[in-house]
Image (tube, rainbow, N blue to C red):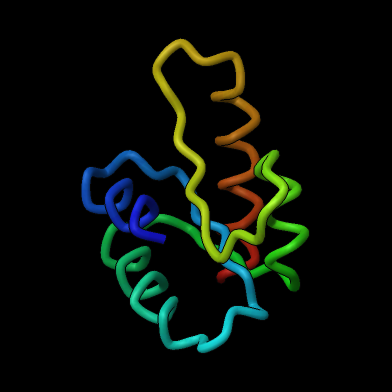
Length: 90
C-alpha cells in the first residue's frame, strides 16, 4: 500500500486496484481520495488472495498500482483498461 501511495504522489500510477476484503478497510480509505485528486481511476476486487495471484505473488495483496513506461508494449492495453474503468465511474 505504501508503494501505491508513492506511485500516486509521483504521478506514475495509471490505475489502482484495491481489495474489498481488507480488514480494517480504513487502512485503504485514503487511496480513493488520493486517486480522485490525481485523476487516476481505481477499482475494488473481492479478494486480496486473488489480487496477490494477479500480481504474481503467493501472498495476499491489499492494493496495487499499474504503471506504464514510455515505449512499453503494454501501454495501449493499459490505456484501454483505464478508459473502461473511467466509463464505469461516470
